[in-house]
Image (cartoon, rainbow, N blue to C red; front, side):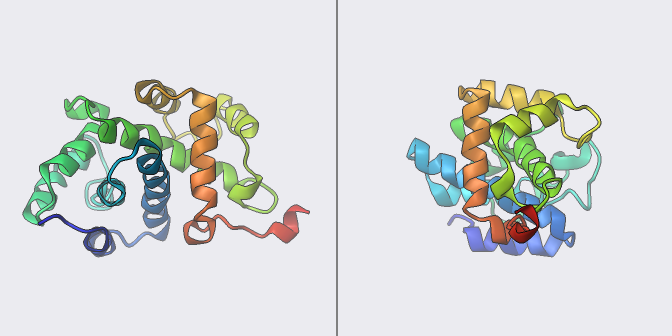
Length: 193
């Protein structure tokens, strides 16, 4: 038996009360599912991995507790070794190397999804529809903007995935646009015009 996407979402809702954090996990899921389609991989497996990757952030907000202390909880809930390993590997300090395509994609999408969300919030209409590759790259150079986002993880994630940075950014923007309303990124387009 494998934990379904629905069961994963129930775990998220049990452990995560912060709406922004839930939306982050949904944003990473949007990017991961799009990549699963592109690579011909199991969309449900990739969705479940994305949803669960930060499920323990509110109870273990500091490294190295996250995600190491969350992993036994997931094991107890019947989450597969494959998903748990991917979640462990998304933290550079875990000592779990990223080897599989699933692991590399989770790492590549995690920080970028958060950064794209931040980029959306500073647009006039507060919408992902207003975000483009050029504006994202300019914001990446601004160290004061979204300073908690690790730029090296964004750059290294794309490199490990073997996708040029511009292409990776554009791909994730499109994936998030497809689910903008659910992610709280549909914005107020009237303000942007």
